[in-house]
Length: 192
Image (cartoon, rainbow, N blue to C red; front, side, top):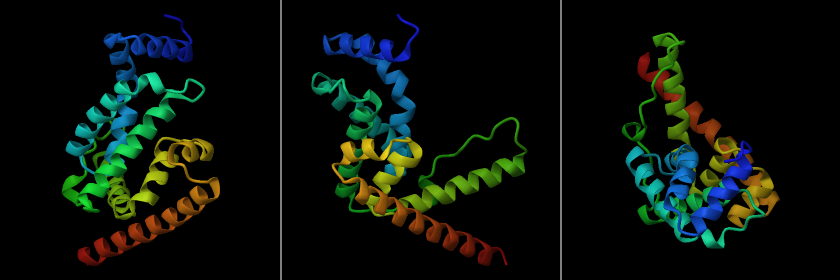
């Protein structure tokens, strides 16, 4: 294949559309981390994220012929993932995250155990706070800050206007800050 990742991706997509399952497996491998990350941040559970990832890729495979090649494949795939996760959240009627739902994070070899524990607690606090956001705020937050989609890409993925996205992101950041502050305050009170 070509050394240009976009050309390689276009070839894999074309082969997949024509039924080449190994080409689609290559696409899945390229995007497995992004899809799982989206599902985990939206659903808050490793088990749910694993199940959702499989379903998202299945839906992508079934609908691959309808993929608009003028868009980035990653945006199209994350749109499918985001919509699927929103549906799952609606079905479970806002079941909130607990600390038990947060996946363990392996510390880096370069970090001390204390630093790794602090980093893990920070990530856990952010993940727990993310779980308290209403789904429409969580969706745009995950797409923007974890998947680095532009406002335009989020607008195409969600059908929202850019001003609505900016408003939701602003409110989501405020809610996250309040949730994290409350969490830190509660933890400090429990320690003392």
